[in-house]
Image (cartoon, rainbow, N blue to C red; front, top):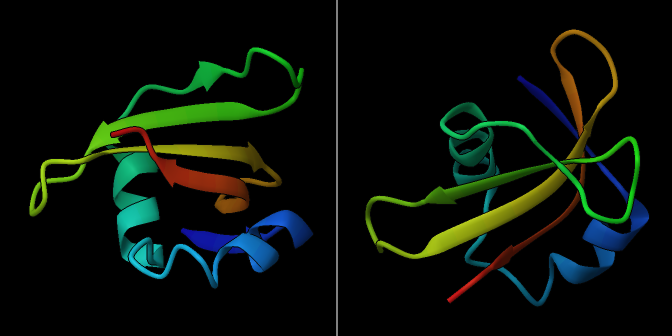
Length: 77
């Protein structure tokens, strides 16, 4: 899976250093694609990450077959 970053995620990433690409890919592959409440073409992935047990939410958009654009990612708890 190839990841592309939005400008928002590039700015927020320096404050959320514990969320890396491996965790984001894990959340996207191991959760159902849910429609976003506000954006029509965005999807949500909500997944419990195994080592810590925390719940991660990733908002993303599928650009092409194997390319995903990350809009934002954050911990819910």
